[in-house]
Amino acid sequence: MKLYPIETGNFKLDGGAMFGVVPKSLWQRTNPADANNMIEMAARSLLVEDGDRLILIDTGMGSKQSEKFFGYYYLWGNHSLDASLARYGFHRDDITDVFMTHLHFDHCGGSIRWNKDRTGYEPAFKNATFWSNANHWEWATDPNPREKASFLKENILPIEESGQLNFVEEASRQLGFDVLFVDGHTEKQMIPHINYNGKVIVFMADLLPTVGHIPLPYVMGYDTRPLVTLEEKASFLDKAANDNYYLFLEHDPHHEIITLGHTEKGVRLKEVFSCEDIF
Image 1: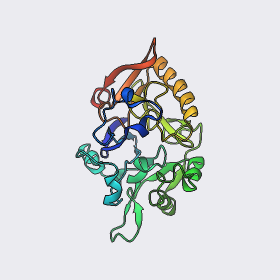
Image 2: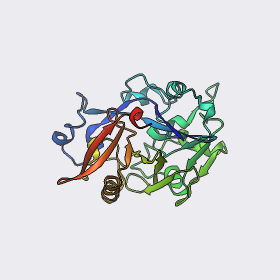
Image 3: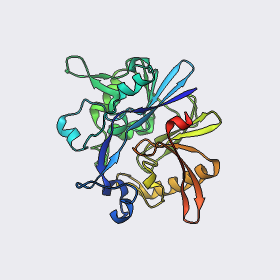
Image 4: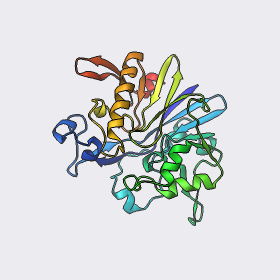
């Protein structure tokens, strides 16, 4: 097995929304905001090469949305999914599986693109099976008002229409790795746990967006069930510290992989690694 970080493009989000009830005077110590109160975010996917399978975990925002849409998210940097794939000698047509942790636009938008004449949409990975789960798919295709702006039909429905959609079943290893299902951020978000060279690499998605979110009360305002997130974080972070998990951070532009340890203040950051250190 080989692992590759795939940088799909950086953006910004409102710092207050990212930290919920935590005051700015606290969260800005780890995640400084600009003059518009926006903090820097990454969209870092993970490519898993395992035998004859090439599995891409999450796909970023993509590029099909309008200039007005992207204007809300202050895109920055020069990363792109295609350039990241090419860096390791791959093309999007080589991808056999696209695993979507959940269907918010910044995690699955790159799964679908305009067709050649821009009259409709098509899968951005023509040879891939796309993986979600049945409960989350139902949640995303009939969204609640709170999450409706994050579940964009053009990112989701064309996947089913293509015939390339499949569902992950709980307690299964259909893609060769374990999956933790969590419900605080959104219904049945999936957190991959990958055994790699004697280490457990955990793709954190939105269970732990950045290093700044390690303290338990630091929960995003976007989460639909923040008290559930608190319970899920407490359980996961304790296990991650006990078992020395290596946490792959999807949204932290300045920290790629971290480990955690127990302290008098609770579970806190232990070590920071680049992907090159581990992969």
